[in-house]
Length: 119
Image 1 (tube, one colour):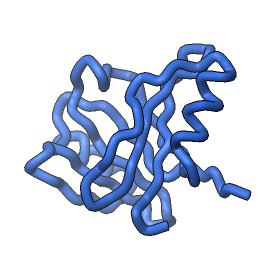
Image 2: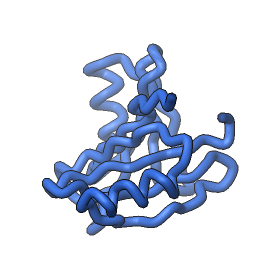
Image 3: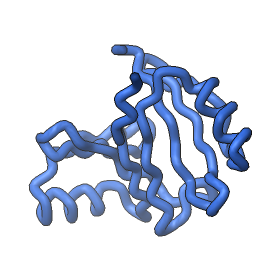
Image 4: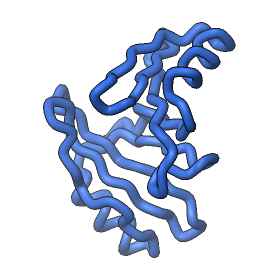
């Protein structure tokens, strides 16, 4: 049986560095900034975390993206479409990290599935 945990949450922001400072001050989250991708990872210290992604068409203001653990992204995407969902971004490699895909459920919510190289 798959554990299907939430493994990552992306919060779209206009400025990743100022967002990191804000959330670090409010919640005490640990931050790690990747300048190459202008992406700041956050961790709450209790196995939950995510990142701040820059605003753009794909990452619009207010559209937080939740990543769900997947044992088989291809099978999950087939199930999504069979049940009336839409694939927004097909299975895509994150070099050195794993794979992900983004879909929209029949109600218009965006979610992602993720498989780590470390499984």
